[in-house]
Image 1 (cartoon, rainbow, N blue to C red):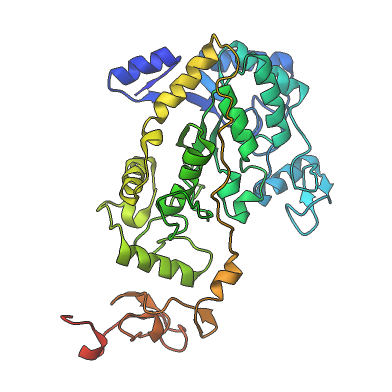
Image 2 (cartoon, one colour):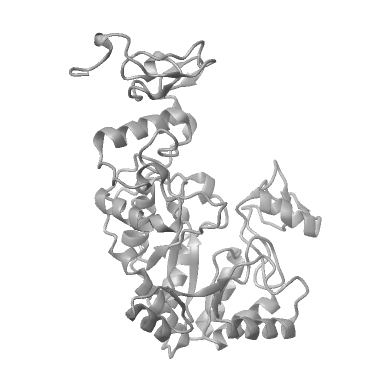
Amino acid sequence: MEVALSPAHARRIIGAGKLAIVLSIEASHLFGRDVDAARMRAALDRYHALGVRTLQPVHQVDNAFGGAALHNPILQFAQYTETCFIDTDCDATLAGVTLGMDVDERCHNMRGLTPLGEQLIGEMMDRGMLIDVAHMAERGVDRVFELSRARDHYPVYISHGHFREIMGPKVAETEKSTPARVIRMIRQTGGIFGLRTAHDETRQYTRSPVDNSCQGSSRSFAQAYDYGRLGLKVPMAFGADLNGFIQQTRPRFGEDGACSAAFRAEADCQARDQRDHGPGPLGTEFDEKGLAHEGMLPDLLADLDRLGVDTSALRSSAESFLRMWERAEGPRSGMADPATDMDEGGVAPFVPAEERELAYPTKCGAAYCPGFQELGGRCRFDEECASGQCTAVACNTIPGRCVCNDDADCGSGH
């Protein structure tokens, strides 16, 4: 591999059969806490000389350049340790309370791009650097777009994010999720979108050829990808965000962790459906571990292919990135794409977990999936086993396994 310093350099590296790496910075207090215009320009010059060609002006908490998009209460606690500020306009952190950040009634950050942040964006444009607004509050993103438009629609992109309209409420209701109106801005500037390889629940995109029958797996990733490809029509890449703390795409198979539905009975039935109705396993570790590390991204692509997804946009994502980078270096002649063909339809309503759980039978106070577990599988009571026999005692006080006690418990030939 080799660090790419320009799009032309990246093309030469790729042409030589090597991996082109583009250096970026993602840090909550970019260039330190005590930063002014002179320090910002000096830091930008220093990091540019070291090969950095893209960065995020804002990460998890507010900084000198702008406000951060809310998405995790832990980070609001972190912000509180810096500001000692308490807001009562919404309940992002606790009931009726948001810690650390000044928010509106939607739990969106009131802090946009600061004057120093505007200077930073201008300096990045002067150097042909790529502007990543992945963690920026929406007010800041709107201002970056205004600055982009004033510079012949300089490209702006999101390295890792979720499409707001296709996600379940847990993600969709956070500011960090990306609404379609921001995708329109990205398309108009010639940017791209890095789609998170997440484990989260998604809604069903009815125009996808894939049934969303295994939440958190490649099946639900397909819903978001097809929504971006067919509906929003934005260039996409994998936005894995692999950093050790972030959960990734779940497996479709295996006893420990197949699917990630909101409650166990649903996950068990979804896992059974993958086993019984396919398509079958790839025959790699991805089947039961999911996207455990970046080396399994080709397996995720292969699984999407098996499900019937058109993965050509993902397979050409390096080219999309390079074209964006080439546009940043200019020259540009106005808007890259009017983005008038976006279609936000085809997204099925989200049914809350509480309502879905009512459709399952219960025993010992727990909902369960009837007969989902094969011989040797873990069980809490007889009804969970295909054989109808579980060795658990007293409602799983002593965990059990599915067994056959006599020939009548097993299918023909077993």
